[in-house]
Every structure is written in C-alpha cells, then in structure tokens.
Image (tube, rainbow, N blue to C red):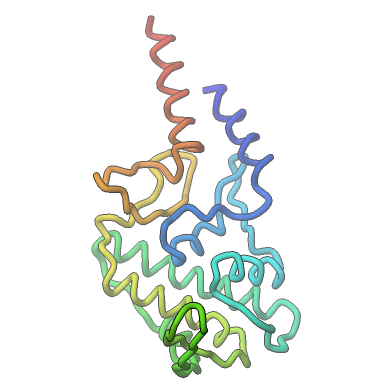
Length: 201
C-alpha cells in the first residue's frame, strides 16, 4: 500500500496540465478533472487554461471572442458537467436529460468553407462564429452529442484503479483496456499486486 503515495507524487510532479489519453476529445474534457494526491483536482482554473486545452486538442484556432473574465471558464465547466452526467447515465444504461447540452448546440453558428491548398488539395471545413463562450465550445458540444448518440458505450470506460476517475474510449484491438494509462494506473496496479504476493509468501 505504500506504493500509492509514491505513485501519486510522481503524477503530481508530471501534471502541469490535464492528461490527453482518452482517445476521444469529449472524454479528455471529462478528464480535465483528476485525482491528484487523493484530491479531485480541476485543471481548468482560468479562461487561459480552457483556451490552452482547446488549442492543445486542435479544437480552437484563431482569436478569442471578447468575453468578460471568467465567462469561458464558467461556461466550459458547465458544459463539462452536463456532458459528464449524460455520459455516466448513458454508460449505466439509463436516461439523461439533454436540455443543457442542447442549449450549447443551439448556440452553434457555423458554415461550410472550401479550403484548397496547392499542396494538400481541396477539403471542406466548418468555419464558426465565436461571439460567445457557448459558440466557442459548440464544436465540442457537437462531439459530445455524437458520442452520446452513436458511441459504442461498451468501449467507453473509466479506469479500473480505485483512486482514478479518468475516462477513455477503448480503441485497442482486443478491447481489453482497463487503465487510463499503463504507465500510471496500470503500473500502480502491478506494483500493488507484486507487494501483495510478497506479503503472502
């Protein structure tokens, strides 16, 4: 059992930003909250944190709309919690009220744009207005709606480690992924099992 504090401190030393390991951006959004040293930690502490995360996942390029301080943070957290409830209810085979998510989806303002690079050839991309935090987050809300409506929830899982709350989409060939990451919780489990065997000798 003394391995867990050591593993938690290793996680803390390397955690300056949330993990991106879920194989789905919506589940990575849920993972912007994680357990660090036994406490739930929110990696979205400011508008800048949310913006950096959106850029890291390729979900936002270009200028931000003019927003009052804290509006993007509050709106992103509201979206995250609405999606968390729906994902948990869908995973449990229950029913969820989509009203909050639909509010985000109704804010989307986008149109198709043909982009034709001399090197890459033509492609169609969506160009969105960003006059509000809801519009900025609308593409992520759309991905959440698609995941909840069409995702294979036998492959949407939470890490099996008792001290982890991270989600992932199991895209492994065998579909037997158990841990958010083998390097983190998978390794902690192996160490705990090894120590358990040593105590039983």
